[in-house]
Length: 271
Image 1 (cartoon, rainbow, N blue to C red):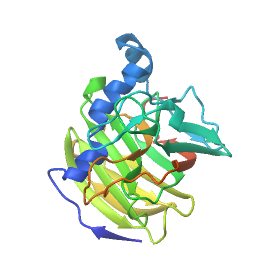
Image 2 (spheres, rainbow, N blue to C red):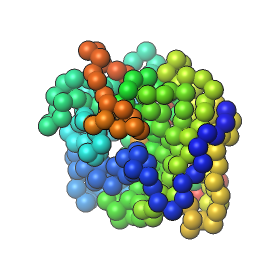
Image 3 (tube, helix red, strand yellow):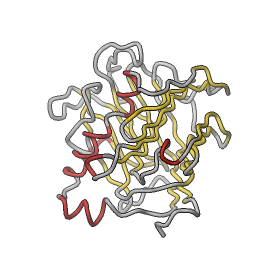
């Protein structure tokens, strides 16, 4: 595997803003559609969780929620629907289909944790989707909807080229890196593990347990706020060089997640 694009420092590019910048509005809507107001946010969503492992496809509903009834931004042409997040055959399925939800032509799937998680190693085993105009992504996010600075760590596989992994992160609302990794395989042909090991002085992104990209710095130069983990599969609006135009193939498209693991860093004080 080799990195094929250099980092972009200081400001996020347009496509990175679309990939990771949706968190601000998304998480605000998510807290509302989860059925709670400020009291629930204070008592549930602000609680920091510890290590966990989901491996059977039967994800613990006390840990996860299905987003429903809203969208994450204008770069999407689909609305999150709880019906588009299902489990079976040992896998979690995130689907894009042509059911009209709200004002959008398509529906898509997002699954996110209730609790916030801090420093540690995150790993997601998934199979992406190959199709123009779709994105399979994993994000770790918090921001102003929760009274925090906007911090985010993300990775994504664009359906136009599923041999590449896109990597980005945000610190206090500013995007600092955008890197593209050549995977050396087609992420749509089978399950592989993608993750990041996040510490106060650096982040190492991994594929199948091997480091593929890393950044380092002082704690204030890196994401440092506990955040929610979000698993997403969505379709894009418009015709951009980044994702290309989405054309519905006449049948649902499904990204699959086999497992999610978080190993908490011993330095955390969340236990």
